[in-house]
Length: 309
Image (cartoon, rainbow, N blue to C red):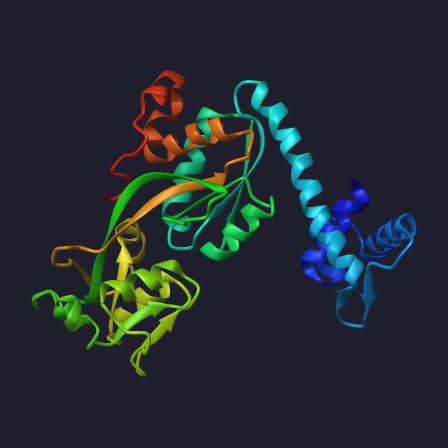
């Protein structure tokens, strides 16, 4: 199993140094382990170059099998954890960037109160990367905007959240623009890969040919600061308002009906033995105040208004 985990890390990172760092061992030690695995199998698995590593055809086939084997082994461990009662041990939780800074601190605190033995290990990434990691067994669950529409994943809606318009303070008294008007303005959006970007484009009814003067940012914080500098307008989720708008000269306005919104929820593999426990965790996500009491947790609704909802 040790050899397989090291090889899986090398296949994932494509670099001995990064794979060794991910495995918390030295690069020479990792190289020795890979050579031992090649000796056991009787054939080379990687082509070693000065700056990168390529898998041989056998290595690519082995990498696919190794992921399946390691995922099955992890699910055996999860099965044992599920039979022990209260959830303990490692929980690898993915969160998209437009949720993580605003929801994660309070959520992790609520989980610690309800499950003292739980070791939450959050990971922030865009939706597609989180889904890939879920399917490959690198994550136990993820908090994302639904729907995902992946047949092998369980989707649990938790709460609905509206988007709001952020514009310069000087425009606070101006009428709130309709979606058609927004697409004619200098609209600031997140970079490609963020689902929130796609949701904003959909609301503004923009075509695939986006305006040339469209400006992009790497985070909601960047977008709001750019609006404060008078560069344009942007949309942000309601949960981000208290954090992002306090340090910039901007105003916040609700958009005309039908207002844009998103469904925030949790997803995990349907085969995960911890499905029941993850369902309980999703209810804590929707109602963090119930986390301190098992009885309250059992009574908590499956979905709630959520932060700012």
